[in-house]
Length: 493
Ligand SMILES: Cc1ncc(COP(=O)(O)O)c(C=O)c1O
Image 1: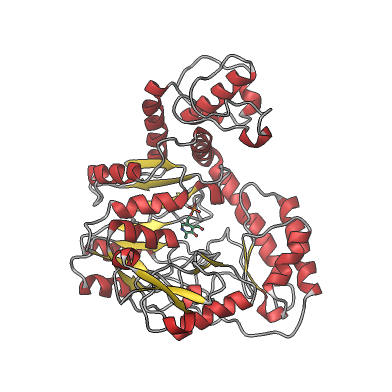
Image 2: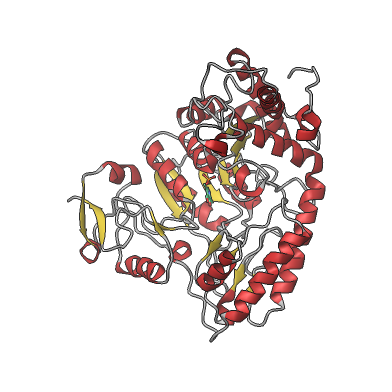
């Protein structure tokens, strides 16, 4: 990092994060140089930072190479930023990604084992994990979180189930779980790590939604602090970072761990673009510096905001707010609402909020997930809560029972390993005729993006019916070749 002062930098970096964030420093220098007319690049990107051709849409876009630093210096600057990320998470290996947790998950999975090896995986994981398993050619051994009968939501992945799976598959190469889950429910990661390590394999945790864990005593520790070997997280989901920003951190054999840092690097590079956006990476670097400097205060404030919102919403007759219970441990920064007891339909509430300019992260009939982050304040949360309450009252009806989404209850029978099914010859058949056949495609209600059907799984009448019910209710069925579900793609033979 150059130590020369940059004109105007402090106004564009109000917290002075650049002093501890080399990629952010590079972004500020480059964009400052452009503004002052000092830089006229003959390198990509082709927009050359001119906004008179396609307009403001390219504003802020700076490449990593030849943007944040001269090409020949860039690797050292990136390595500096990644070393700082590793230190922030108490890891010895870290990489910043422009490919979301999708890329970070897939890179981690590619680093785990050899094609054909079993891997113990929670079946309620995100589609990116399933496709990582396809890429790596691993054979999934499914474990399932318990579904809480009161809320219909997934709880912890039982340690005993992981122990049983590992005992039944002594050649397994690792354990993969999501923690916290999409709805903020948490597992006993310490117990899962003990189970994995007793079998001599690493525990990899997809913490896509919870990059702030471990940065305040008001929230649980992050997965590495709780014993995991690798942690994947989307900086863009929970932190003030650009869309697609993510990182993966790991404790490797260099530090007495079980993951090979060379394999991790190779796997990361194999699946990352060769032209990463410097703006995205600088925003991960900045968010990491922010967490280290001000995380305790910012995360503490977030917990308070969510606690106040939960209290106001829980006072609404019939509206349940997800909190810790005898069955569930819930991330204190997560706001999840269950409107079944009010009779209001989640989609109707969502539509009303959209009409007032408040898009939600997720809404299906029985679950609403507004994303509250450290970028919110009392005024923004107050507006959200006021509109939520008004929408619930407008749509109040007869209370109903919660029907768990097929995303959480999926109990698939795997007939072929996902990679074999992915590459197998397939045919498109009438969906009813597909029952009993082996699925060739991945179909997921989205959000949360948990596959209800995956390549290699037997299509059952129950799964098809559950998917059709989601669609009939206005939900989005993602990735299906035929999203109407009139036909399905199945493996030939
Ligand atoms: C649990 C989980 N893991 C991974 C991902 C992928 O994250 P990204 O969208 O950053 O690629 C998601 C996305 O929603 C997710 O819910």
